[in-house]
Image (cartoon, rainbow, N blue to C red):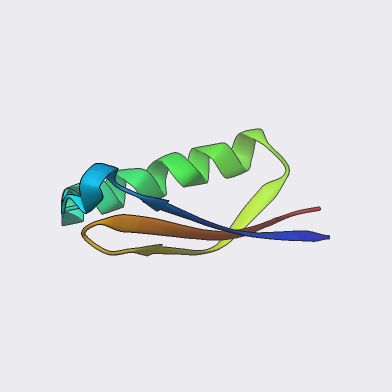
Length: 57
């Protein structure tokens, strides 16, 4: 099992992640999980970055 922790900041650390954006991003991650053999253990978001902690079997 491989574990990954990725952090994606926004350009110039602009605060662009709203509640609506966060919910849509989680929906997209669920679709990605179904297409590929991976599982998001945690998706953390602040207004200026998003963190993914996931594994692949």
